[in-house]
Structure formats: structure tokens, C-alpha cells
Image: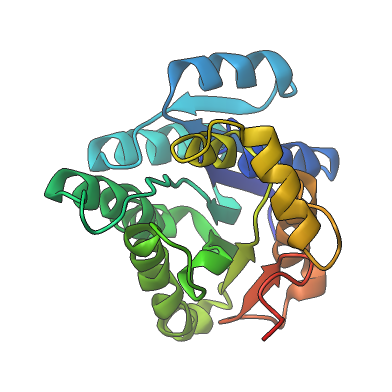
Length: 248
């Protein structure tokens, strides 16, 4: 197999950024994408200088084409594709509108699906594709119906994608974080809480492990799925939640 190389969408902050750091430390060549200029600039400062940081809107197929082209020119091929870009827009049925629905599905579902399609020519035989889903796709959370649907659609695709790509030994798996302390989580909580730290502390107390997840918790699982140790694992979802959601 050629030298290990990874593309991480949504890789300029939170879980994606932590994963970029872990994979880079393990010898991967790494490229990450991000939409917000401030997070892209921060990633260029904080990630190792040889990490390729690209600004791209996950909703834009033209941006995806550009990303795939630049990654192809830099790396030649990919052994890992981590589809991690996503948005969370907590909204209840009484205030939901078409624009909110379309934005979430455009990023979380359409954007990630077409990134996979467009990156396929770069993926080596035996490559690993990992998709961030989240436990919210299968567990109830008020205001989460649109995000749950957008991620649930991806989760439903995993078995079929795994079978379609099995002839090339390309593995397709999902990682589903529980509540994780990331900038996106804090922003989402801020839409319904005047005291985000207090809300997070309360959530941590309810977790069986007594804490929220960290980006590094998720990054370690992604690194496993990307590694040769997971060479016979495909079509699966690994939940990384500290036991959240297990109690009746």
C-alpha cells in the first residue's frame, strides 16, 4: 500500500482537528477542510505545518471538486477518508422552516455522500472510510429531529456502501460520539441555555462515566478504524459515548 494519507472534512476544529493531530502523529499525510475562515486560520496556525488546510463549504460540490483535486495533486492517493463535516441546528417543529431543513441535510447528508463519490478515484484498494454520525441519530433529543434525520440517513447507507466497496476491500464504518465538548456542541447548547458551562456540567453528571467526551476520545476510535488493526471491520457503527443512552 502507498504511504498513508487522510482527508478529513470538518477537520479545522473539534473532533476533526483532534483526529488530524492523532493521524499526523502516526505518520499520515493529512488534509483537512473547514468552512469558517476563523477556524481555517486557527488550524493553519495550530496544526503541523505540513498539514494541508483547505477552506471549503461542504454544501458546494464545486468546492468538493476543488478539494479532491488539490488533495490528489498533493498526495496522489488516499488511504483514509474521514467524513466528519456537519452542522447542528437545534430547532423544534413549531419554528422549523425549509431553509433550516435544507441547510442541515445539504451539509450532513448530501455533502458527505458526494465527497465520498468524488474521492473514490483517490482511494486505494483497502482504504478506510469513516463517517461521523452521533448517538442523536437513534436516540431522542428535543429539537434534534432534523439533525437526527440527516445523520440517520448516512447511518442507513453504511451497510450498502460497505458492500458496494467490498470488492476493493474499502471499509466503510460509522463512529457515533455522545455529547462531546467541542465548539459546535457549545454553540448548539447556547441556543437554548443562558449558562452553557452549567448545562454541560449537568450533562456530565448524568453520563455513566461522569464526564462528557473529548475530541481525543473520538479521534482514537477513528484512528483505530483507519488502521490495519481494523482491516476486517466494515459496515459497522462504533458508539463512543461513555455509556450514554444505555440506561432504560
